[in-house]
Amino acid sequence: MRPGVVLSLCAMAISSVGIAAARGDEPLQGSVQRADLGGGVLLETVYIPPGEFLMGSTPEEKSWATGIEGGATPGTERESYEGQEPRKMRVSDGFWMGRTEVTVGQFRRFVEETKYVTDAEKPGGHTQCFNPEWTSYNLTTAVTHPWEPMSGKSWRDPNFQFPLRDDFPVVCVSWSDARAFAKWLTDHEREAGRLPEGLEYRLPTEAEWEYACRGGSTESNYFWWGNELSEGEGRLNISAVDFLPDRNQKWPLASAPWSDGFAFVSPVDHYGERGRNGFGLADMCGNVWEVILDHFDAEGGHEQLYTVEENPRPVCRGGNYFDVPGNARCAVRLGLAGPHYSDSRDGFRICLGLPRSHE
Image 1 (cartoon, rainbow, N blue to C red):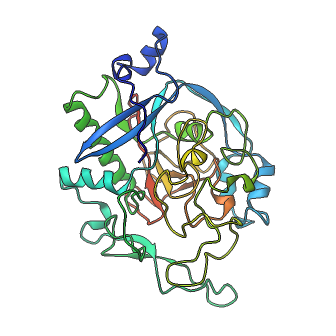
Image 2 (tube, helix red, strand yellow; image 1 turned 180 degrees about the vertical axis):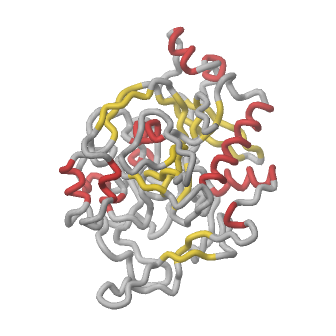
Image 3 (cartoon, one colour; image 1 turned 60 degrees about the vertical axis):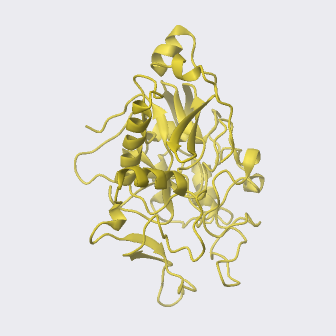
C-alpha cells in the first residue's frame, strides 16, 4: 500500500467530526488517518467532508448498462434496484473512508490477534468460489455457471488457482465477518489511545458509500470519472481482455475492450493515481463487491442507515473483477443472500465515523 501523508493533528481535531465541523476546524478533505494493526501492517483512511450527491441512475444509464457496451442482462429487475430516477441526498457528517478495500494482510492481523473463525470456516460452512473445471456457460444447451458453493475454502484459500498475496483484497468473508473486523479495529485503536473520542471503525452506510464512490461529483454519472467506458482504461479491474489461469480463454459475455492485467482480483490500488477518484479512493468500481452496513431495500438506497428485523440481506456495492461494465457502475447495488453469506467476489472497505447502530 502506498504511504500517505500523516497529519498528526487530525486525531486531536475530531473528538467528533460533527462537533469539529461546527467549530470550523473540520479536517481537510483528503487528510489521512492510519490505524496500526501491528506487525508492520497499516490501514489508511481518507477524510471525506459532508456533502450532497445524486443516488441512483437515470433511465438512460440503465439502458446503457443493459445495452451492447454495458453487457448486463436485459429484461431483469436488477437495474430497478437503483431507483427510478437519481435522488438528491446529503451526507451530513464527515467521515474517513478506507483508501482501499481491506486486504488479505490486514484481515490476517485481525485473525492472528483474535483467533477469529469466519463463517466459511465454521463447521458446515461454505463459500462461493470459481470452479476451475468450468469452461463455458453452454447457453444453448445445459447452462452451467462458473461459481459453486464449496466447503474447505475461505479467505485463506479462495480457490483462485494462483498464490494469494497480502495486498489482494480479502474475499470469502461475510457481512458478519466484516463487522467483527471493524469492532476489533475499533477496540484495538481505542486501547492504543489512537481513536478519537466519539468515533468508531465500521462498515460505511449505503449513502456514505455511493457519495464516496462518486468522488465529490454532484452529477449522476455512470462511473466516478464520467460516462465513457473508454476512459476507464487503467482505472479499474472488471471483465476485460485477460486470460483465465492456465487457459487461452477470457471471461465470456461483454467486457472492457482492453487488458486490465487481471482476470481475477488485482492488488489494491494497483492503478495508482489514475485509479483513484476525486476523494483519493482506489478500486471503488470493480475488483471486488464491497459489503456495506445497510440492509437491502429493492426500491432503492436510503439517506439514513436502513435496517429490517426479518430476513436481512446486506447490500453490496461496486461490482467485481468478473463483472461486465454495466454491472460495475457507481449506482449498482445488490442484496446478499444473508449476513453469513460469502463469495470469492465479495470483500469490504472500512469506514471511520460517528456510530451507526443496527441495535
